[in-house]
Amino acid sequence: MQRTDDVRREYTEASDAALVVSIGRYQQAALAEAYRRHAGACFGLAKRLLNDHSRAEEIVQEVFVRLWNEPNRYDPERGTLRSFLLAHTHGRSVDLIRADASRRNREEKEARQQAVGGYDISHEVWDLALAGHVREAMETLQPGEREAIELAYFGGLTYKEAAERLGEPEGTVKSRIRSGLKRLRVELVQAGVSMGAD
Amino acid sequence: MDDMAGTPGDIYDIDELLGAYALDAVDDDERDRVDDYLAVNPRAQAEVQAHREVATMLAFTGMDAPDDLWGRIAGEIGEQAPPPGPELAKVMSFDEHPRRRGMAAAAPWIVSAAAAAVIGFVAIGLVADRADAPNEPIASAFETAAADRDSVTTVLVSDASEASAEAVIDQDGHGFVVAQDLPTLPDGQTYQLWGVVDDGQVISLGIFGPNPELETFTVEGPVSALAITIEEFPGVVSDGNPEGAFVGTF
Image (cartoon, rainbow over all chains, first blue to last red; front, side, top):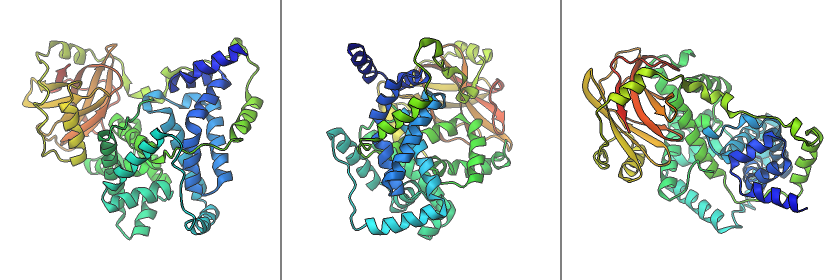
């Protein structure tokens, strides 16, 4: 029991990169620690995209099982583990959204749930502070940039679909997504948000 | 190389796609084209990585995963995992990652040119007054980096040109090159940035195109020198062209 606690404590203090190396050696406790750190963010993103609790769970399960089976797909030189897991979560969610049946279901659910609204950004002070910085950074964007990013990232639309929805030229929306992301990065860095660090 | 990334105009078009690509907001054909482009363009890779980091922040909600989800994951991997024991450990090497395609064997001319370059550190602040830089957010980030005492700076010069470029790398590895003074290259050529890292290896850090302005790049770990070479489009994976290269040391 003491050894189990020691192992757990060791992983609690390990970097994400070290966790992934241990996952590559079939250390389940390392995967559990990665899950503890990042599963909430993955679930929150998938749920927001899909508006479906069960399917969001399935996506998160798939993402972490894939990390277990293919840990070498994560390259620490290319970003944080959270960024890697969220990118996978987003990609799989978008795959689902882009299936026509899924899109119809989602739009129906969106229509029903908009009245309820609300999105849980509570819990820890740090979480709230970060969410606040993100919200403030989003507010610095030009309206066209903000709409384009929201439709593309949280709406799961391609930039062409977003352009159609907004009634703007495709090239304009494409450029606004890029410039908006660059502006967001600068705003977040200036707000003291650490980008890309474990 | 894909035909979409063959000319300066094409490169501009595909660069404009990088934000949408990072958000999974491109169609399959475009994704394939960007994938091909990223395979030979570390600067574009770094940009996509930066966009994804921003997306990571957007995605952060502070939400918890459902209580019973870990149990299901543990159950699934428990069925797949081998019995514990060091003899069954799966050894993973990060050295074989595709990312390292951009890493070339040491190019002796860059290392020796860097060693020979009589270039001191430039005072931080010399390059900080580029308020007229072309891209305002990047210019702002550059100014922040240039004003930071923990950043390092250098000037890249060439024996073959009166022009020079100035480079800043902040403590987090975000790099900027003020390159608008470099002469515009003829069609079919591009500037390419290289870095000499700790072990003397030379890494391609980005493709600047024929008419660079304020350009960005990312490094991980110390860099002892930078070089900007002139290459045929769309740039090279290794063995940069020494002729007319601009070199600066840190």
